[in-house]
Length: 374
Ligand SMILES: [Zn+2]
Image (cartoon, rainbow, N blue to C red; front, side, top):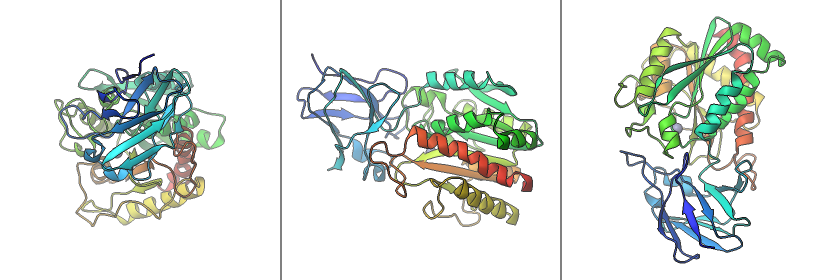
C-alpha cells in the first residue's frame, strides 16, 4: 500500500508537497481563488492503515486567522458521519502538526466537519417534503449554482436567516439543519404559533461556489461576501446582489446571519451598534433576543465576543450593519466556534455538527420569545 492524500472532491482543499516520509508529510492549504485568504482544509488519507503519520501544514502561519490554530484540534472521520477530534494536533513553529495513526484504509481529515453541496441538496429536498415549505431560486452564483431560498410561514412578521457567506464556516449550515428540522415540524407547538405570526425567508448557503471549491472566505471571484453589502454587483458578488433584491421585496423585521469564528471558543452574537442611527428599539430588541437565546440554550453566552463598534464606525458592507441600517430592523451576526465551547468543552468532538444543529433548533425558542415586540 502506498500513502495517498487527495482533496479532489466537493469542499476539498490541500496541496501535497511531500509524501516521502510518513513522519514528515508536508502539506499546504490552497488559497481561495483570486484571494489571499486560506484556512479551510479537507482531505482524504488512504493507504496508511495502522501506520503512524506526522503531517505538517507548512503554511499555517500565513492563514487568515492564526489565532485559530491555538488550542485547536483537527477533525477526522472514517464513515463521513461521525467526526472526532484528533488529539495529536498542535501548532508549532508556524506549522499545524497533525499526528494520527489511521485505523482504516480511508480517513478524512478536515478543519471542521464539512457540509457538502450534496448534503445541501438533500437538506433542501427534505424540507420541501414538509407541508407549507416553498423554494425559490433567487439567482445564481458566478459558476451557475442555484441560490436556494426557502420560505416557511404565513405571518406578517418577516424573518430573514442566512448562513455560510463564508463557505469554510460549515458549522453555519449544520446550524441551519437543526433550525430547519424544527421549523418544518408542525407537531412542535412553538413552531405552529411562530409560523402563524411570521414568514421566514431562509438561505442556508449563501456561497455555493466557495463551498464546493473548499474556500475559507470568498466566492469564485475572490470576493468576501460579507464585505459586499451595498457595493455588490453581478460580476463580483451576485450572491449578495440577488439577496438584497429579495430582501427589498420582503423587508426584514428580523435578520440573522450565521457564521463561525476561528479563534474564540464561544457562541456569541455581534450586533449592529456601529450603524449611524442604532435606535433604542433596535438595542432593546437585541438585548431581549440575547436574554432569550441564553435562556433557550446553555451553549449560548454573552460574556465573550467582539468589541462593540462605536456609533457610525460600523462597516456598512457587512450584512448585519447593512440590513439594520437599510431596513431599520433587528439584525445580528451569530458566531460559533471552530474549536469548542470553553464553557462546556467536549474533548472528543469539540464544537460539532450535533451541537450546532441544537443551537439552531434553540434559536427558534428565542425568536418566538421576541416575535411579538418586533
Ligand atoms: Zn464568517
